[in-house]
Amino acid sequence: MTNAPLPVAGDPIERVDLNALLADSHITEVLDELDAELVGLRPVKARIRETAALLLVERARKSLGLAGAAPSLHMSFTGNPGTGKTTVALRMAQILHRLGYVRKGHLVAVTRDDLVGQYIGHTAPKTKEILKKAMGGVLFIDEAYYLYRPENERDYGQEAIEILLQVMENQRDDLVVILAGYKDRMQTFFRSNPGLSSRIAHHLDFPDYSTEELLEIALRMVQQMQYRLSESALDALRDYIPLRMGQPHFANARSMRNALDRARLRQANRLFALKGRELTRDDLMTIEGEDLRVSRVFQ
Amino acid sequence: MRITQGTFSFLPDLTDAEIRAQIQYALDQGWAIGVEHTDDPHPRNFYWEMWGNPMFDLRDAAGALSEVLACRKAHGHAYIRVNAFDSTRGFETTRLSFIVNRPVEEPGFLLKRNEVGGRQIQYTIESYAAARAPEGRRYGERTD
Image 1 (cartoon, one colour):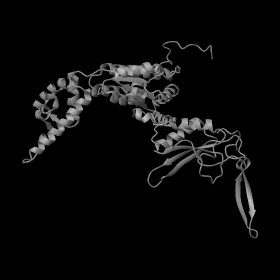
Image 2 (cartoon, each protein chain N blue to C red; image 1 turned 135 degrees about the vertical axis):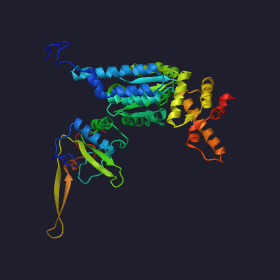
Image 3 (spheres, each protein chain N blue to C red; image 1 turned 60 degrees about the vertical axis):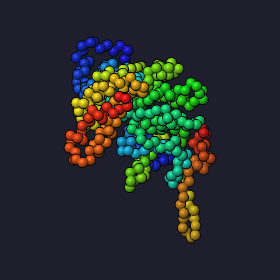
Image 4 (cartoon, chains in turn orange, cyan; image 1 turned 45 degrees about the vertical axis):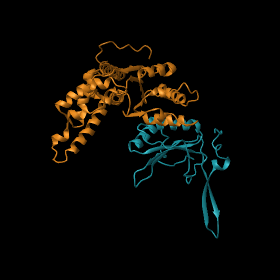
C-alpha cells in the first residue's frame, strides 16, 4: 500500500464538485436565513460561513478518501446579554446537522444547575445524563463560568468540568459543546481552566448592537407580534433606545422585547379605557406614542 | 447451551454497530432505553439488575450505547440486555428487549423431574451456573 501512486491534481476521477455538495446540503438556505433574520452580528456571521466552508471541504475530502481527524468544533460565545448567543447556537445546531457533523441537530441548553449536583456523588450522573441527552446535537452551556467557583475548593462544579472535558475530547463526533457568557468573566474562567480553553478552537465574540440595529430588531419584533407602530410611536421608540442604552441592566435585544411587551400592556389598558366604542382591527394592532412615552426611561 | 431470550436471540450476537442501530430505532419510536444485567438467566427471572436509571429524552443512540459499553466493562462476565420501554397509553410496557452481552461459557439448565402422587411428574429447570456459585461469581471472577 505504501507505494500506491499519489493522486495527481486534476486527475479526472479524483474530482469533487463543491457546488454540488453545497446544493446537496441545503446549507445556503440556512446561511441566507441567518443573514436575513438576524440583524447585525457581522463578525459572527462571517465566522459561521467560514466554519460551514471548512465542514464542506472536509466532506469533499472525505468523499475522496482523504482521511483526517474530524475538526474540533467546540465553541465559546462571548458577549453581553441579549446579543443573540442562544439564537445563534440554535442556528449553529441546524447548520452542523445539515453539514452532517452532528447526527440530530437538536440544541440542549443548560446552566450550572442542570450539571452540578448538590451532594457528593450527585454531580457525575447528573452531568452524564445531560451529556447523553445532548449526544447527536449541540450542548449549550449558558453562563459557563458559574461551573467554576474558585472561592469554594470543595465545589462540585470542578467535577462537572472534568466529565465535560473527557467527553469533549473523546466523543467529538457525538456532540458539540458551546460555552456562553459575558466576555470578561469567560476570560477569567478560561484562564483558570486551561484544559477547557485549549479544547475550544472557535471563540466567537458577539458585539453590542448599535442604535440603528436595535431599532431594526424592535421593528421586526413588532412585525412578528403582529402589531404596528404609529408615527408617534416610532418617534418615541427612536428616542427611547439611546436613553435605555444609557441605563443600567441594558440587555440589547432582550431590552427591546421587554420594552415592547410593556408597551403592549399599556396599549391593552388604553383600549380598555375606551370602553364606550367598538374596536377595529386597526385599534388592536396599533401601538401609539403614548404607550411608549409613559416608560420610566423618559422620566 | 445458548440462552435465547428476547428479540434477535436466535441470530448471531449483535455487533456494536447493530446494537446502536437498534437503539436508534427504539429512540426514534420515542421509547426509553434501560440497560440491565444479571448472572441468573432463568427464563422466569424478570428482575435483572438495573445499570443506572432508564434513559429518557435521548435523541441519539451514542449516549445509550456508551452505557452499554460501560456496563459490559463492569459486568462482562454476565448477561446484559437492553430494554426499550414504551410509555404510550395502552402499551405502557417494554416493546423491545434484546441481549447485548453473554458469558463466554453458558452451561445451560438442568431439567428436574419430580415424581409426585401416582405417576404424575412436575417438571422444573435449574440453571447450572446459579447452582454452582453464589451471585456475582457464577460466570468467572467476581468483579464487584
